Length: 370
Image 1 (cartoon, rainbow, N blue to C red):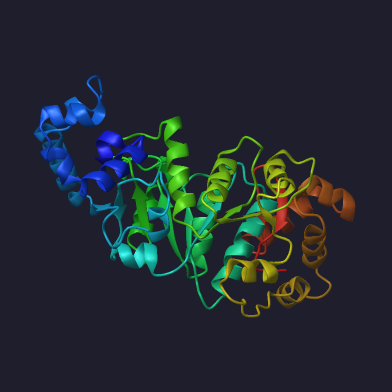
Image 2: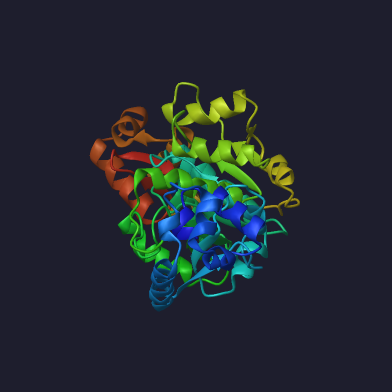
């Protein structure tokens, strides 16, 4: 049924409700099928023994990959997703623990956003995840395994000791993007984590698949957090879907002239999303309880301890903290120091984990050091 009605799951769900089970559909004769779907339905010819044989081979193939198929009538199926009228009748899941432990043992929180994540978005994505990790009711972070926001959220979750679910826009044997294949395999092997998709194996990541994937992310999650997005970004679709399901939506506000923040600001203006302006209030709004106090390392103390109070390393580090994304040329001008000396200092600070430098030579302080 998932293969036949995957793009129209409402039909499959209505059939199960009316007939009492999925198997009952395949017990109908041709006349009954025509009566159910109409004489010219595209579905009638696909309902029969041949499709069951294809599904059986598919399940065997997925089993060889360490994955399985869970249905909407199973106890382990995501409980919140069951409430959605367009929930898939089944999903392919790859994990090392039971579906119930993955999907239903802790609250799921979705984090979505642009692939072109800025250093501001990356910093606050990680801060938000770390704040959730300090709560008593530790959530599971759900995202879509894409570049930018998605992979940042997944990695931050694992680093903070949380679990994470990657919902794929493709079959589980077609990891997208391919550069995340190693991470996907690692994720599937961590207790409480999983890869999930409602697409059959050998399904590539076609453009239309992303919207269908996004409804699963929004549907299985108690709340959705939009980190950064253009007004027409995929994260906006997920956030609006979450709102349509009656779920909480939060958005990271940004500068009004930044393209990557316009979607976030728009959702706030439309009162679809609550702005994240205080991590403590945000955590309480999620219903996770208060986050325990966390004292980040003091940057000045860290720099002086490592390099000495009079070191140029201290001046450079503090200037980078003051001006996020400052490039090496501007640092040289602001501090009136030779470019080569600044470049060498920045390389050392990056090697020591104090700062990060992107391809455009822009510098930012690592999140865990304030």
